Image (cartoon, rainbow, N blue to C red):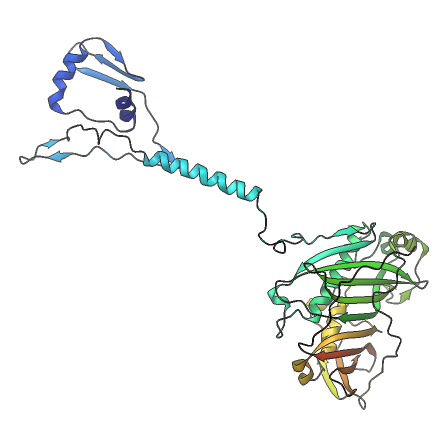
Length: 413
């Protein structure tokens, strides 16, 4: 009887005409309470039924309408309800099962979000690209995943991608140290004196270029270089194997961003950055050989009419250092690019160029009698003023390079 009442609360069943009189006799007079259903016999002998109102059931916020009871017609066209059987009195459990399934799926999704872990250790490396300070607070470390748009025709990362990673870690190092205020790495005291950092010399050695999907680990640190300069080193490794991929060393000086002239390092600025200096040797041995100045007679390949785009400018309103490398390689002969890859380069930045500059790229190839090729480069303005001198070394593609696991130089202080 309880089951019948529960079923009736979901699906009201209309009694057949044949059983109406017999029910009246069994119920008799008075009222009966059947778990929320009250029945009362009126003075006229008719049975009055009062049921608690129930809202239509919902699944995931959608109202579910209960279909009306099925009605049949006999041969004379008279409507009648089917006889009550055990089967048609069972409740419709589909709504309950749907609700339970929805709850379990939602709970499973939340649990997976809270307890998610990558299947491979290199799937989620430094997801926010923030990096961290290591080795007694003197070395900054950041991981980068090589994206599909960062690789070239050789299916490896381009030299511009490598240089962008170096520049990014340098800026994040200054920011993590709490010294970044305005411009590219300007400290609070530098901002007061309108000073910015500019690179004057860069040496890069590439042992192997990463490919799409590789994760590289970039370490960078700074050291003193003379009285008014700062040296910054980088060590790029495969985050999974520890193999050294790239080593780079650079020299930086200060320039007044108003007068665009080089400046000595003020003592106030030295006091800000000196606590972060490492007393270590350069990660790349200094190339002391003089860079050749090319001219129209000594250059074999010349590319003219190079102009910076608005997107090539940095926050200090001069052309980004990485863009110079692309311009230098514009005049490199195509056969070298097709058969060789850049293994090392040395650059000397002599003058900045702005958005209205028009440049020329000059290249001369030196044949040293081996499979490796050396090129001399010059980037200049149309009036002949030097912007950048450079020297590049090229090795045959797919040449086997004996990789090694490099370590950050220890602080000898």
